[in-house]
Amino acid sequence: MARNPPSNGILTLVRSDQDVMNRWSDAAPFWDKHCEIIRQMFAPVTAALNQEGLISDGSTVLDIATGPGDPALTIASSVGPTGRVFGIDPVPKMVEAARREARHLGLKNTQFDVARAEQLPFSADTFDAVVSRFGVMFFPSPVAAVREMLRVLKPGGKLALAAWYLAEENPFFSVLSRVIERYVDSPPPAPDAPDTFRFASPRKLRDVLEQAGMLVPTERILQFTIEVPMSGEDFWKLRCEMSETLGKKVATLSTEQLVDARHQALEAFRAYSADCGLSFPAKVLIVSGSKDGST
Image 1 (cartoon, one colour):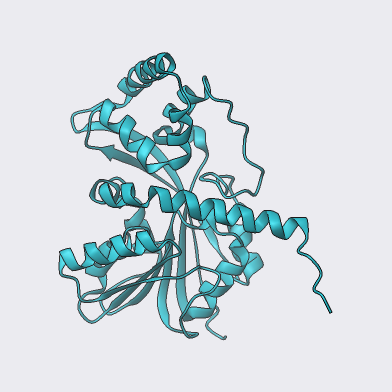
Image 2 (cartoon, rainbow, N blue to C red):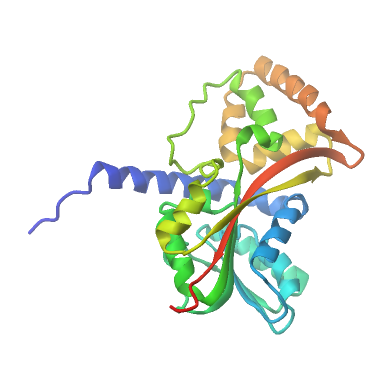
């Protein structure tokens, strides 16, 4: 008997997931190129995940959507030589970059593999902590992914996720985006589409953890400063390279529009000038909890 064709909803989900994969594959070389700057910029978020995950010497930790290796590479120093850190990412180019950086740093307690959050290649009750920095917003099925995270956590183990808070509270993104939107039509994404600010609203990600089976997840807003050690001109290039979506919009501008947009952006960046380069106030949601110790 012939199988029924996939529903439009399933086809839409598959296409959306493939679009996300394509975008991150295209951006991977640039995340590799800027990996050290990215690590510095988001170090306060990594520290918060470390704290929420109760990560310490000897811990076994899983970093999901590790990208070119961070926060896994940073966490490796927290777990010490007796601990282990595993990083997974669905984009092969990201994993290749993470492995290169681990070799460059001489780390012996890390391992990086290609895998999806919804299908983790690990046995149940393996990890003391599972973390993900800015990955959950792009998962095809966040509830299924969190269920997998809970499965591989040891009873009593900690789960900690970081997601961007509201766009207007994060000028690192919004300043340049507002300039480009003056030239390129940018309709808002669907409410649950994979997007940087998918879980920006309070409680939305916390509800996902509850649906996945976590008993008492908690949520807090982390306020910090993104220190960008570069000029406004270099920051323009960094943002266009880090965000494949933004880069494509900029590529559609005419020469005259590009000159005008760059001028407006550099003027806007002046408000965030600092001795180190640029300094942006930022807010991130840290959502965390423990796996039921009785399971």
